[in-house]
Length: 125
Picture 1: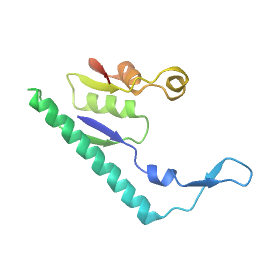
Picture 2 (picture 1 turned 90 degrees about the vertical axis):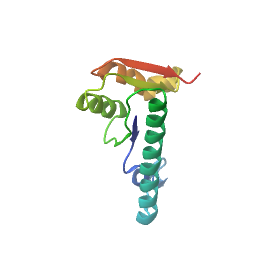
Picture 3 (picture 1 turned 90 degrees about the horizontal axis):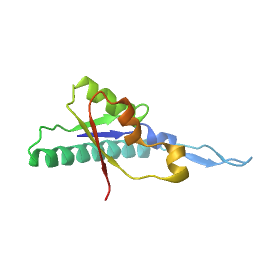
Picture 4 (picture 1 turned 180 degrees about the vertical axis):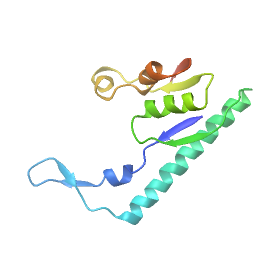
């Protein structure tokens, strides 16, 4: 079970209104940002473990893999699947639609294009 979390997210989220409009980088409480980073990593680890346990309960071979995604989550997933010679990838889909799907893209669609093995996309319903 792969869970991709974005390192340094807490540092990038520190913004304040700009005098000329929009947002600009703001002051960062390094201690608080570090706590957020640790919690994001812990959450990713927990989710990966829960997913692996669920898969093993169903009789599948699975291991937990929290991954710090430095770039695109789909790239991280495809790279790890290639590295570990995965037999298949099962990925959830939030079902984005319309403009939001076009702007953000779909991680599951990107994984379908980049994966080195078969991909099963499971929709929320």
